[in-house]
Length: 230
Image (cartoon, rainbow, N blue to C red; front, side, top):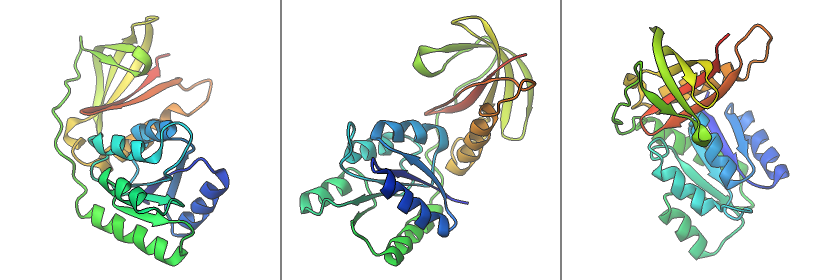
């Protein structure tokens, strides 16, 4: 199932879009701001992003530009869906890297047809530029969010898409388990997407007998997630 990110500060409009897209069997994720969209994108890598233009804080043009500068955002379709009908707005959106600019109100059949066409085109070109591999091995210190740092201490296991390490969160010496995405999967965003889905599902589990999830991190040349140990 393909994932589409909707970014709009109007909850009723997001709900309407969600209903349209879910009827077409897409998995829908949402953000209500530009800043929120970037955070969601980093931890999900959707197949498409649909952006409003005018939102409080970061506008859609800025979001589009930042997504295109992301190594995994260069290959996905980005569509503006906006009530701003001026030629300058449309041109600006396309110049920032959007694949399409659809005006509100829109015809649902035409809208879904365009979604399908853009996704089909992207699927034929789903590989991304090969990143320089970040080396994960004992002794290496890796960066989390907000200045957090983790030290890799030992390798526990490997298999499937990843490698599992024992480590330490340096700020408080918490013992952690770090699972990294194998570098051979880093040049295909569908593999990254699968890994991030596993990561987000794993760290969201809440149970007294399951290790606590800490964070999911994606950079230009690496993906990993962290859980407390014990």
